[in-house]
Length: 425
Picture 1: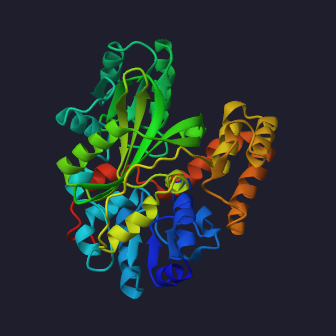
Picture 2: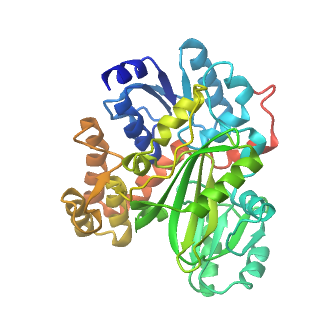
């Protein structure tokens, strides 16, 4: 192991952002392997900074509000420094695919072609792809005006969802329990200036079953590894506080079909609802990147490390399905989720106690994001969030929104899809 770590320490990896819970899990997955990890982020005090595994943090433009400025900074940095791998830790994967021809000569980068990304990046495009290759998803209507949304809503029984076609960290999703609540949603859409006739919405039936996620690595269409998890406890914005590994052979078959059809290269994660009665999934959203890899690590598959190997051009043998069903949890999400339910300090304290002493659903679960005994500096973001929530439990949404703004591409996605990088970079 010591020799392996010493070899890896010579491999320099630049992480595309440092503000998300996702990248925090990447750091926990890659850090113990000995890689030299650096971060680019607009926030010099981003959550990822607080880790013994991080060597340096570069302050950069925000990728969502200034995608070209962000890319120019990345390219300048890659020309000035020697990096072996550029690791797309979040939605920057879409941006890197867009500028792939400019990045590949400078660094190892394992991402699919931009044309393939456009089949998955938005929810509407993903639904069309699923129809094209005959894979299951909930009944869905697409609309761009409020009149079209109302017409589509009349086709559904409650509950159903209204979703913006692009969004991250479960933003842009409204669950409609009663149709009288449509007026309230219209008010929110007006406030966010989304009813502009350009923003695309999905009106989608609620799928039966349990929420699960699948995480995969492909090498030019060939499936190398797949890991599936079931959400045991829901957190803020629908994220998973506690998850457990599950084995889904049919999901593997579907992923093989998607990978071959798109000639997918790199990471891909897909959300779905699993109907235990039919033994079939209903796919709802695709994320063309790794999402929250630590449950896979706990169960013996390090997807983040496979992404590094793929970026370096190494030959990787396909990994068989894991045979374990171990749990992992996210303490920060647990606190945010507890605060979001009733905005109660007591709820936050109770959840902190349950996490710390592995009570209830946390029994036999492993911390996936901030393992403070292994990575002491990671306790600082936890402490800051805990203090904020205990002082003001209603600050949960503000804390989440601040981080999302630093790493989400947001409205840059349709702009990028309509432009070419030539002459801009």
